[in-house]
Length: 324
Ligand SMILES: Nc1ncnc2c1ncn2[C@@H]1O[C@H](COP(=O)(O)OP(=O)(O)OP(=O)(O)O)[C@@H](O)[C@H]1O
Ligand SMILES: [Mg+2]
Image 1 (cartoon, protein in one colour):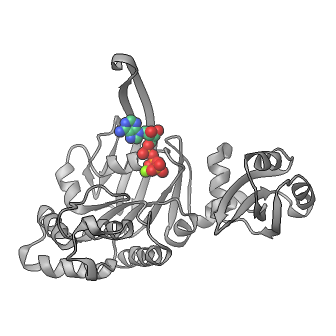
Image 2 (cartoon, helix red, strand yellow):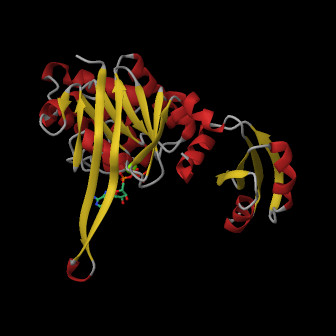
Image 3 (cartoon, protein in one colour):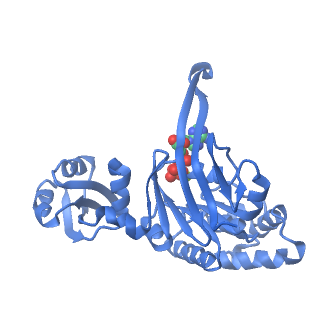
């Protein structure tokens, strides 16, 4: 068999829905627009993109939950439309969020149900369930009802459910969403150990450091299209001759950011919260030249200004802001 475990060829998905009075208006959303890529055996492949980019839709087509409007895809050589049963036998799907679990019963009972559904043999089932409970760190809560779980525990159970039948190929859609830093780190370790055991994984995440740490290759998707596909190192090449001016302070709002954005020599501007402070990242071509014009337009409380090397996040921002 070919070493291409996942192959997507010109995948297109259009959602059609009715809106308006009497639902007469027909609305079409082109969610995925001619997406092509392949994932090698044993590879951890990342799909990054902003909200609504088409990541989950792509995963749903590859895992037989949605039919492609056009194009085709195979998983381990089986066509997702013609051979969905063969595909499903070989894959595990881990979706972020709260759905897809039975709340009235315990975690262990959920896993029993899914193990039976996925055809795990009765002789090995209970041992395998204990093994995955240990792997995800849920063993001590295994016999509590899922309705009493915290969000992070539900996410761990999602992961356990996705691997209980020991699938060859795993699709992980934001697996660390809602997890605390320690649980996220454990999940990344678990993901890496699945790769070390020869599994093939397609992962989406909004955490750039996570993608940088785990993925061998990354596709950046925006408005349903792949705008770049490379190793994390290769993607950083898009910003290699730039620097980042990091401003820490209070009162960094849209007007401050727009002023900075308007300066010549500024490439991208983004802001995040860091504990109670705000951190604005300004990507520039020449930090030496831009430091003074940037600080001059800041009408907010500034605690610190630093110059940093660009990261994968800066390359990502550059790409999804339409520069690819
Ligand atoms: N069931 C649906 N009906 C109609 N439109 C949909 C449906 N599901 C998704 N969409 C639309 O398709 C586009 C892609 O959505 P998708 O969920 O694939 O994005 P995503 O990249 O997974 O985003 P996020 O990072 O927020 O999870 C969006 O414009 C979304 O509004
Ligand atoms: Mg999604």
